[in-house]
Image (cartoon, rainbow, N blue to C red; front, side, top):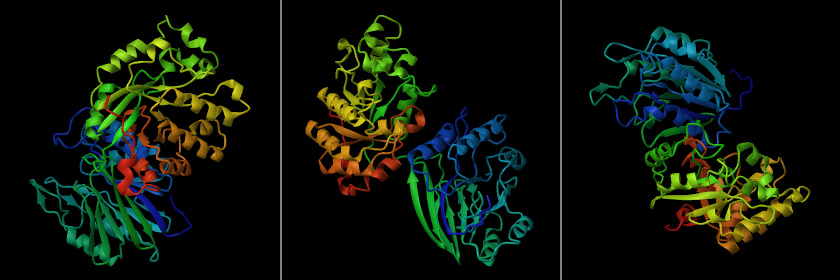
Length: 496
């Protein structure tokens, strides 16, 4: 992880204190220990990580380092970090067990690295019998040897150095000889010291020329993590949180275990649990309508779009799960939970459903997964035709507009932005911001907003970590909607 090129800009994604344990609840009730890996996944899915240079996790990855399963839990976290597809640094905390065992899992980690012209040093401190963090001064002295005097220094450790926290609730958070450690940091012209351990966090504390930041815990609501942008010696901190309690979050695109494409672990009970944990004010449970009639391979062939008789041919078979789905999902309907379908149209412009199943839903999201084959050589024409047909069926929300083109590796037809936005406006149909295998088109949504089209937030949940993960959705909307107008611009399903 050594870069010769030095541009002196560094974008860090920093997290701490996951306290992961998927089996045993933490005795500290506010710690969501079971969600540790999911919280990492939510971070990845809820924000744009494309411009992140380095991910840092500042210890206490797991909750009980002496557990017989601790190595497995660390391996789970390592696997999840790998999905970020970014360089990362992790250090052990006081809950992570034996340091040697920790580095057997994270064997690629080294205590001193260079990234974008910044020198980053990691300390793996030990804790004495009283639970006090003890720094090895000889190790620290060795780490400060042979550094480039020109390159800024960033230090990582689990325990806080400064500010002095003292005793909180019978636990002493301060490092032994913390002031002596801080003097050495000052002497060595450290730019930034990053710690975890103290769960409330401390955004910035300056002592001399050293800036100290204590990153809050990811495992406790509101599930905070930081993005730190460095430009030479200047720092900009942005705090994110997975709990968007400043907004009345509504998520209208949440799939269920009835989908062929949902994660095997997905359950409605689990979705409702997250509904509470992440304070989703209203949610919509729905399913791909055609999937509920067809064998998996028949659905994925898309033939039901070209031949309306395909769905009818499975009406009296065990593949027709529509009734079972409706009965299963109806018991969850409430003021906060709507039930619906993600619908498509066939070559005749009819909904890909049996006539007797069309009624009794709270809402439809119309979507294009397939075009009739007669439009193979006229995709733009077919795309607009299908959208027109969907809106004739009084859908409430248009799902993932233009994703069809991305899936087919076709250029996005910018000339269709205006007519589709106009169609949505004329029919009173909302349009969803959806990042599931998709990148929303900024200019199209600007047009929709200007034309008064309501915008729905949609996670397109197929696994737990996606539900209500809307950090980048809100970042996207803020590019063209004033903050004061944001809630008014969002779609809200009428009382059902």
